[in-house]
Image (cartoon, rainbow, N blue to C red):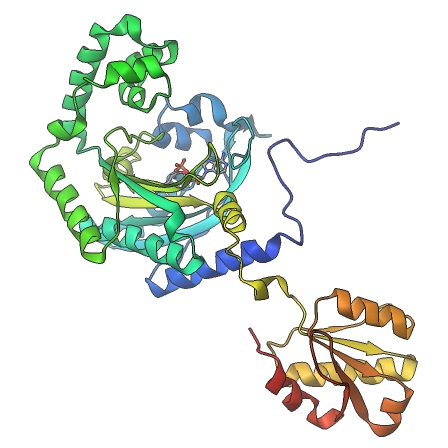
Length: 429
Ligand code: HAM
């Protein structure tokens, strides 16, 4: 017997009963981003492998062990994008849309791919909504990014469940000085570090700060602090950001160990975390990357951005039961017609109603069926009202109008008056 085909582990179907929540989330975010003046950009899902190596960093978990990399038929090494920033920077450079200091406030949405160990909230194909802003170097735009996520959490009803963690990595010069001090300190305690941290000490020492190992964490207690190495410029930038968050009343926690898993950051880094989802609690994360565009071959161009994980935010909405009831109702009105003549009249009537009420969610029964079976389908569809066209209604050129949820008797409505009547009883999305 042949083995039945299955989706790849960690890559999920999003089934029809789940998509209303996704669309609600995506709709809420995209409306908000329109209102804050962000424009959508769409990049390919596959890029040259080199792009990710050069931007994310050769000695990061993503590049070292998580990328889906393959050779195409031309022998080129390609990679399914593990994140969006690299491709976005490539795109703005390729099209010259950040040249001459042009400000770009961009956003994107789509699948990303990382070969991580799947678990709740962590998948191999997952979806992000990301924002990237180019050519603005002040803390005001860093603040705007955080303020708009704060508003989003408010609109979604999840503000109380998320916490903002904040840090500054400083300029590359100040980070370089800090790295030296940290390496010197950790080298003196080399034997007490876990194996992974010993390796990172040589390749990417700042990531040691991120360790989950208790012994290494104990060593880190007396390690030099990044904040003490910030230069004046970075310090003023960070103070500027904090002052703005204070002005809006957004609470935050300073986390000096927040270093992020991608190498391109400088100055501001932040993460929105929740304790409601278990181990995979970061729902949104990002920061400033002032050196990245230049590192990728462009003119010096400041950049800042973040990405949120849609799966995690959908899970959070579900966990906190913050899903508005109306979003799961996909049908307002269901039309049942009995007999061929009624079916033809019903089809024409439905189209006339749709002309007048373009937002009405009107479903016409397909597949004929008895009164009982059509009625059952009408009820199951979740519709608020059924429209009924049988012999009697045909003879009188009316339609039976029956409330399916709650009170109300069936009434007869003239065909010509149907759209006007529906407009009064259905709130259209
Ligand atoms: P990141 O921290 O790697 O940053 O990912 C951002 C968010 O994507 C995470 O906070 C999480 O919500 C979600 N995410 C990451 N990996 C997975 C996974 N395996 N399964 C489910 N969700 C996941 C970036 O990707 C940066 N490009 C963000 C950025 C934009 N920084 C500046 N601009």
